[in-house]
Length: 339
Image 1 (tube, rainbow, N blue to C red):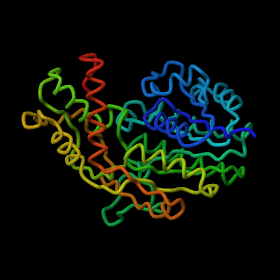
Image 2 (image 1 turned 120 degrees about the vertical axis):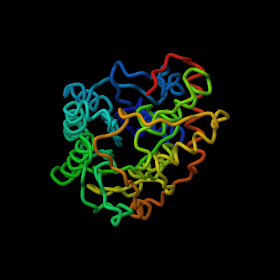
Image 3 (image 1 turned 45 degrees about the vertical axis):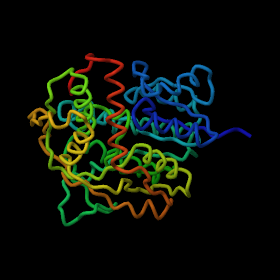
């Protein structure tokens, strides 16, 4: 009997790499990962030996802006399960590159779903939207449920509204089993340094190594966030496609620990032996023109459907994130930009 096949777009990212590891360890599926030829493979380091041996995991090269490459990748993978994670995923960057963000995220999702319609119509497909679609939510509407209206606060968020609606459209128009997630803040090892909490951890690691002055540069510290661990997130994504998937369904997914961005910073500084010497300075370049400042999810629908619960506490997530950056700084020294 042929083993199931999974296709992960964006496999080299934080979530994609953790998801690949989870599927290799907890299923018998073969895993196909879509990435750009120039994507760094650092996050896949633990899987490279398997990739080299062709042992249950294979990389396919393509770009969300290139229709033919996406069609070819889907034909090669012939997936039973798809996790569409690839995106221009940095909200702050989207203010500088809005058209690139819209093309990559909206048109890119259309390319992926159209290729699946032609070559793997029966696949169970996870379309990764974002909690950013809700944007500026009034406090009286917290926690945010799936029926909350969209009020996107960045070009990235607007692109994810498009992604969200495209996913639902392919379910309704073509009978495809697309499922949409609006994942709230999730972090941990391998988190990109353009995101606030990872930037803090990276700067602290550089300070501990005496590579920069003991100053952490920050943006808006007042935004409220609910934090989940990336390793809990990938368990949720596996449950999404395997526990009675409902075509066109959308779910909020997130953690249970809510705090301000400033409290995240305080936690990370508190883990550092240099904490008492670290100063905090606001950097105007780190402020968004508009901020989605109340991101607290109602996740009851997803939990009731799948039985999933987050397991990793906030403090462990933050310690592991800081330890990840300590390891990266130890390996690469002062070759990092301070972002």
